[in-house]
Length: 401
Image 1 (cartoon, one colour):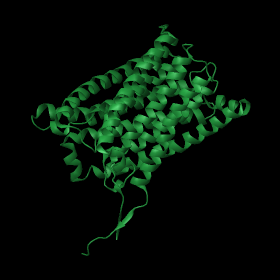
Image 2 (cartoon, one colour; image 1 turned 60 degrees about the vertical axis):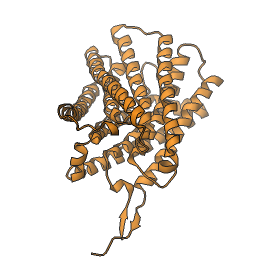
Image 3 (cartoon, rainbow, N blue to C red; image 1 turned 45 degrees about the horizontal axis):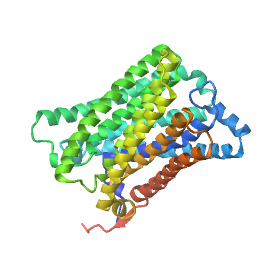
Image 4 (cartoon, one colour; image 1 turned 90 degrees about the vertical axis):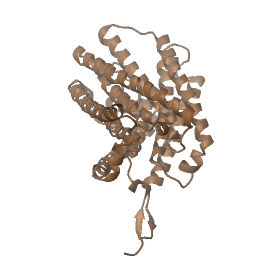
């Protein structure tokens, strides 16, 4: 008898298992970001959090406890599946299947690796802020190392993209247009955007003008690269979808625009804060609210389109609730996480700051409840998918030799 799990047949798309867990870490940090007072700092740190634990209301204390437990749990899963993927990918590179992948449209799935690496760096930075006492006193020394890490990941991503484009743009007929009937080719744009948002963090947090300047320029480079690549991939893919229809197994990629908008939106907010605090460039609260509303509109529209296609294909019944498995199912986690995070920013950095809604009012909690609903739906999906793909193996008979 031989045991087999879906995850035993490796695909680079399994890096999305790590990405999804890292994204859920961010959703729990939103509780601390917007509900824990952190006067004089752009983000809450260990000292702010544990002061609030001792002096805050019972509701705040419960929220903090849930946030800390959520962050710890999903950072653990994020790193666990990152390590598993790195080991599996190392073995995968020595197989014929890797060479086949490298010479197909699916070569861009390799960008799931830098995407996961960038997400893990972001998640670990959250862990440092939340669980390490005194970190803020040395944070300025950490920013150059963080930017160096994102630069290294960015170079890796650009090398993968260069290999792919160099092959398909110099050898006619090697790119299968009939298989370009999804948004799978937007994965490189997603990876570049994750690098950009990480690169932009020092712009929002540092008080050193050189660090802020480097952060602004570096994040702009990777952010613009993401936008350009994403636009080209989106329009060419949509043309192919109209001609050939969509593929059932790759249908979740139709939702990739949703996390792309959230990540680029947070990058823009971080850059705006850095420009305001360091270079005296100002954006009004009303402008920020409208900016976030535009991003949410794009997310809702692409979300509705994606859900229609997924429903018509019967994707949920087959790959999420049924017995069929596909590593691409993990692509469904990122959109829900992204909607949760951007909704939190919309209500707190948009509606509240613009004076449209009072913080902790009935309307505030109604909108926030939507964000939390998306969050816990994705928590349930992550555990469901992990059980499907990484759970106990099913013994299968092996023919006698």
